[in-house]
Length: 276
Image: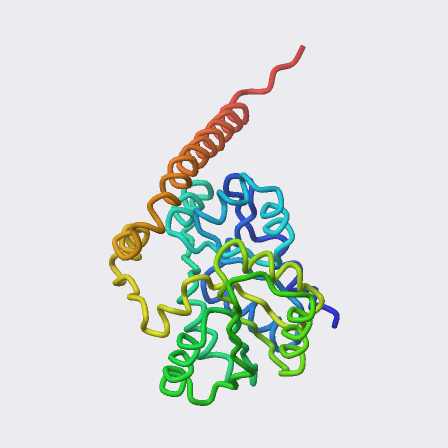
C-alpha cells in the first residue's frame, strides 16, 4: 500500500542526530499519531524505541547500526537521549518510552479499529496482560498473543508465526524479545508483515504487573536506570558499566563540537565583509 506523502515527509525531516543516529524529534502525541496512521493503512513499519543501551549496541555492532539506519521511526526512550537532543537543538523534546507507547496505543487503537498483536515474552506474562487489558481497554481488538522460546526459531516456526500475524489482521504488532533480538526480528520481517512492528523490550512484564514501574518523578529525573538496577543488579550492572560512560563521552563530544561550530558560524556572520 502506498504511503501518504505527508507522513513520509514528516518522518524524513524531523529528526535529531544523536551520536550518529537519527532520533525522531517530534512530540509524544505526534509520534503516537504517526504509528496509528500507519497502522490504519496496514503499512509495514519498524519502530525502534531507543535508549542508551540500544545506541551503544548500534555504535559497536554494524548489524545493529544497519537496523537503526533502516528503521522507519526511532523514538527517544531514555531521558539521557532526551537531554542530549534538547542540548543539541535547544528545543524541548518529549520522552517517547515503551510503557507510555503501549498504554497510548491500547487506548487509541479501539477508536481506529486497529487489531493489536502481542508477540514475545512468556505465557504467564501474556495472560496477565490480557487480564489487565480487559479492565484498561475492554474494546481493544486483540489480534493474538504469542510467546516465543528463548532459542532461535526454525525456518518453519518463523514462517508459521509470520503467517499467524498476517492472518490475524493486526495493524500493530507489539514485540517483546529484548534488545537487540526484537529489533533484528522486526527488520527481518519488514515487508513480510503488513503492520507497524514496535519493539517494547521490558514493557510487557511491567504492564503485566510482574515488575515494578518506576515512579513518575524517578522517570522524569532520568533515574529509571538506577531504579531498574536495584531490581536486577546482576543482569544490569555490567550493561550499564559498558554503555553509560562511552555514551556520555560521545554525547559530550558531540555537544561541544556542535556548539563550537555554531559559535564559529555566528562569529563569521557578525564580521563585516572585506573587499580586496
